[in-house]
Image 1: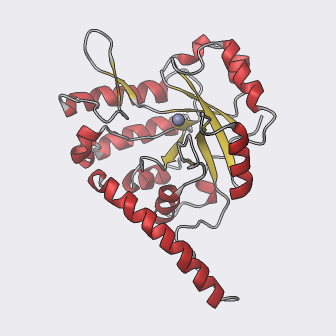
Image 2 (image 1 turned 60 degrees about the vertical axis):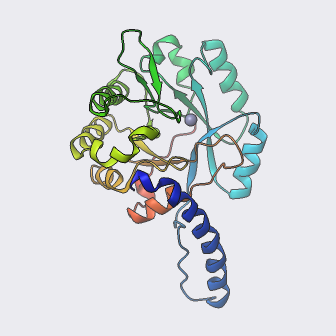
Image 3 (image 1 turned 180 degrees about the vertical axis):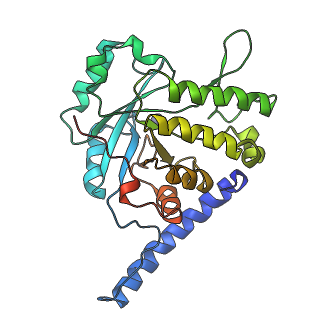
Length: 279
Ligand SMILES: [Zn+2]
């Protein structure tokens, strides 16, 4: 999808989803016994593997939502300056989540993270996802750009893309354990107009090849609508697996409208999805 239409489409999506719910129900009522196609619904069970606890969303809220939606959920915690920083904290997180019927995920933010933790503890997580959204600024102070911040400023888009690609490669080809590339291809607001030009086929293929070499799955992220159809089709062609993530910290848990729509559009089937092993 063209990034310029993101906001417009989100609104349209919301409207169309509400509409579809009504029309699907109505058509079901009037077509009992005949084949009914329900727009945006997939004919296999789906999971939301990207959910964060917050002060608006406790683990009990997440479990309740999982039951309500009849959907398996994976909880993630960041390994970052604002999240888990030590073995003690990692152990506490794992032991807190373990009693609940959800997956235990980790979302480290910087390549090289795993050398600061005990491998035995890391191995207790059900899966590890990394997103490439903190990129070096390129200046001599070692500053970083947080791509999700609305005022993230990029001076030269091509110079940035070279650094950005290096960051993807550091994540995908590094020595840290990794199961899922989260939130792939997101670019900051100031580059949205150049989205399709900057994500050249060559760059997309380079990411896919690196992910394929280690069988790293690709997250389809609901909140920022990435990746787009072209990338998903290329990744599918290469035999990569996918996951869905609402990237939620509130009642949006399990909201996977973009994920379902684009998966349908790209004809993804149950076997195209990564299912973590529960440890
Ligand atoms: Zn996250």
